[in-house]
Length: 356
Ligand SMILES: Cc1cc2nc3c(=O)[nH]c(=O)nc-3n(C[C@H](O)[C@H](O)[C@H](O)COP(=O)(O)O)c2cc1C
Image 1: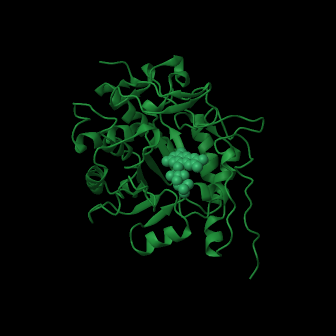
Image 2: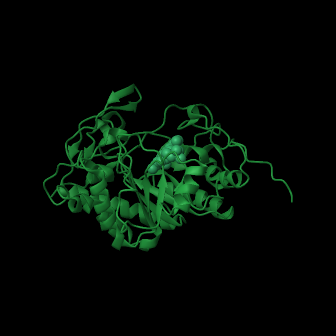
Image 3: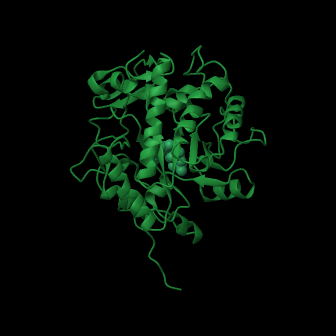
C-alpha cells in the first residue's frame, strides 16, 4: 500500500507572471476582499465560474496567486467571494483543478516530481521563476494514489458547499490532470484508467461520483477541451473520443457540460461540437474566443445553450449590459493578466448608468 498521494507527490504550476507591490489578489492561496470585489463586479453574468482552484493541499505552497480550497482559511476567503456575489444578485460555481504533469519540480514541495497518468512529459515549456523551462517528465500515478486525488476533489467539493458556492465545475480541460487522463496523447496506461475511452474517463467519473456525496448532480458542471493543444495536449481521434466521453457523462445528470470549442477553428482542428451526435450532453456551454455575434449565432441555431466569456468579462465587468446596449467594450490589458493588485483587475470601468 502506498503512502497517501498528497504526502509523497505534489504538483503545482503557477499561472502568475510576476508580482507588484500592490496588495495581493490571492495571498497564501487564500482569496481576499479584492477577489470578492472582482467577482461581485461581474455578478450580472448568468453564472460566474471561478478561476481554477487547487484541490491538493500540499501544492502551490509558496505561490501567492493561485487559490486553493483545502483548508479553513481558504474556505473563509472563498466565503467572502460567495457572499459578495450573492449580495450583488449573482451566482457562482468554483472550478476545481489538479495540475498533474504541468507542474514543474521547482514549484513543487521539496522539488518533487510531478505526476500524471503516464510518464510522458508535455511538449513545450512551462513558466517558472527562472523563466521558461521544458516540462518535466511526470511519474505515472499508482492506482492507490488516483483514489487519494479523487478524495481530494471530494474534500474540496465539500468545502465549496460550506463556502456558499452555488455549484462546482470540475476542470477536465486545458491540459490539467483530468484532461491528461482523458486524452490518449498523455494517457498510455494499460490498467483500468487507460486504453479505452471508458477507462480514460474513469478518473473523471469517480471524481463526479465522489463530489455527489456533497452536491446533487445538477450542481456539478464539467469543463472539457477536446481539441485544445495547450500544455502539449493531443488526441488521436478527438471527435469520436469526445462524443463517447459526452455519452458517458450523459447519465450523470450534470448541471452542464462546458466545452472549449472556438467558433472559428484553425483549419487543422475538427469542430467537435458540430460533429457530435444528437445524444450529446445538455445543457451545453461553449467557450473560446466568442464575440457577441458568434455567441448569438450559436444560441439561436441551438448549437449551445450558454456561452462563456473570458477576456471580455475581465475587462468589462458589466458585459451583459454593454452587449444589450451594443456599447463599445473596454479592451483587455493582457500585460496585467495574472499579476497582483487592483490594476487590470477591479479597475475596469462600467458604463455610466443612464436613468430612463
Ligand atoms: C487571465 C485568464 C485566466 C484564465 N483562467 C482560466 C482558468 O482558471 N480556468 C479555465 O478553465 N480557463 C481559464 N482561462 C481560459 C478562459 O476560460 C477561456 O477559455 C479563454 O480565455 C478563451 O475564451 P475568451 O476568448 O472568451 O477569453 C483563462 C483565461 C484568461 C485570459
